[in-house]
Image 1 (cartoon, rainbow, N blue to C red):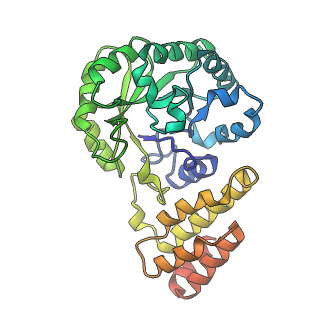
Image 2: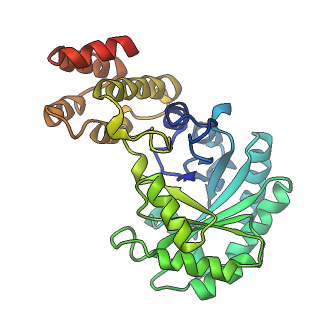
Image 3: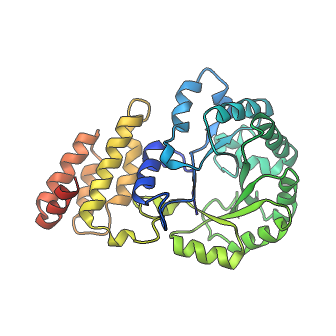
Length: 324
């Protein structure tokens, strides 16, 4: 079970919260692998490196940790791979599926599906720059149409350790249901190659992921959007619904404080607001509380708002104070 890389979501603050509250490293707990949000190789090889290094921060509790990178220049991929080796990453993943237009204009992300020769060159560049680190690829089944039978074999020629298949085309974005039968087809194409296949798309729970893996034969499952507001997602022994409201709100405040502590001087606080929409839902008063949280400017204001909200819920307040 793999935590997906998501820009301005799975940063060092949130990954640490996930590791702690999903009991990572304990029986039945945690993602088996963490990915960083993707980082530009060109940026890491420019004077702007210092700012981008914040996106590569991680805690030891997150191991094994994979750095995801994007770009289209083999030279900067080689240099970035050397850097990632020095930073101690357990794996390097090349993004070949991002549909963002600004990324594609660079010949990166999903644009590489249309340029397999360049894609293969990038894999070789990373392997040469970090020969002792597993190299993987995250991609889609095709660009405008299903091209898996053409595209995947070319990637497999470079013997990546893992290929993660997002079971949609670039054109489809996330607007249609993921087709896990395509993940099954990818498993069949990769059979005997030594490359592991991880499936991705529309997985909301570990149990659902385990079922899809069994049906498709995938070696792993990557979960993304299901993690919003639910750092307990990868704990097989509980569900979010079983976590008391006071505890969920306490963890939200902790997440906010961690973000401010680790990234407050380099990231906009507004990034946290997408998390509040997911944490604060499914209980009486949630809508009004969300509206208040959207106006907050720092962790102190968030904590004050949560304390005020719980003052009207004596039982939850007691739980909150005990946990705090």
